[in-house]
Each structure stands twice: as C-alpha cells, then as structure tokens.
Image (cartoon, rainbow, N blue to C red; front, side, top):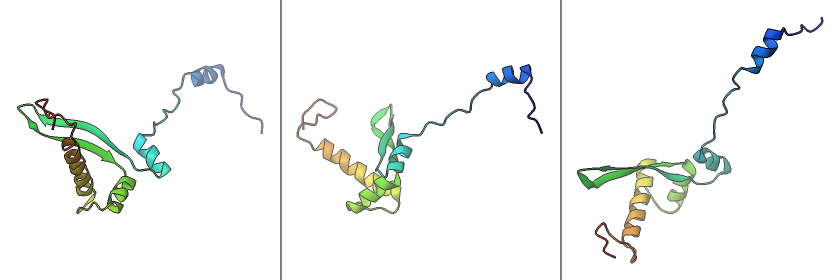
Length: 107
C-alpha cells in the first residue's frame, strides 16, 4: 500500500504546532541523579513587626539527610534532622569571632 501524501494544509499547519516544552531539571534532581547531597535556602521569612521572629525555608535531598545521619545528627524525621544541622550551623556562625550582630557589634 502506498504512503498517503500530506496535503499542503497538513504540511503548513504542522510547521506551526508547538513543540512539547522541555521540563527543566532542578538542581536538586541533578544532584540526586549524580548521587550528591543537596541543600538550598529557598526563602527567608520574618515578622515585620518583630524581625527576631522568622524562619528559613530549605530544600534538600535524601542523600543530604543520610550524610547528616552519618555525621551524627538525629531527629524523629528528616525535618528534625535538617533543623538540628541548620540550628547548629547558625549557632556556629553567630559564635564566629568575626561575626557582627544586628547592631554592628563584632562578637
């Protein structure tokens, strides 16, 4: 059976069809695919009337959590494990001799 020839309309309309959009691979997915730990600060939120109250929104992969567990961090779930790490990191930064507080005083 012979292949049916496309009409002029089919040829022209095919040129204007949207090609499927390529989904961009996130940095987290790239790191996970490579077997690498990943953690990123997504957002910083604070109370505008009381700037001392706030939180960081983090994103991480399971490889990062495993690395924390191997380093001795613990918690009931991955949120608590990452929170323990982040709290310690913030404490370490604030205790750094070159750290300046919100008043500009070197600690």
